[in-house]
Length: 118
Length: 113
Image (cartoon, rainbow over all chains, first blue to last red; front, side):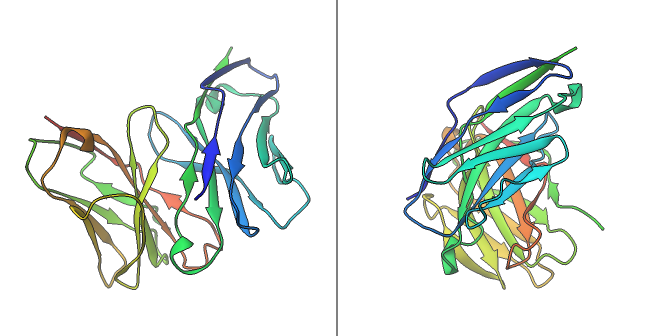
């Protein structure tokens, strides 16, 4: 079974500053994907960034980057130059790539509410 | 290119009733997954449909069932509603190989009273 843990229920940051959201996970599989999703009040889950476990290089998408520590099973999200529009619930998620019925099954953490203050 | 559309957006049902939620997948996507998100929690995987068949199921009882149609749209049916079924139900579509990841809809907020 897979588990994802986000230990920070809430975080806040000033506009233009940097914030890091933490995530740890557990799986016995070697082939998997990790994701960060953003859920604003509109409720739609929006993909922020994705990391393939076999890639050592940390993924980046504009102001968003991850620190992927495979041995420690840690996957943190860094948001640089925070903007008011970044205010949302952020979810870390894991998908095992074991074929068959593992497809499509994302295991989510409990979420971190991020508030960006002007 | 259209995204994922879910209907209705809100729904109130009485305990013991049955409900059907609908999802239109993103154009070109052939796989649909359903999730239940309780208030303040992360989404929980219910099941996935591919080629009109269930392909993977989470820890949900049989009264949660689904369908996928030839146009890849999908329905989630819940029988004998319980108060704990009150949640946001999210639909996500993708290609089978998840090459471009998952696209989520905005969900259906179900309240059971």
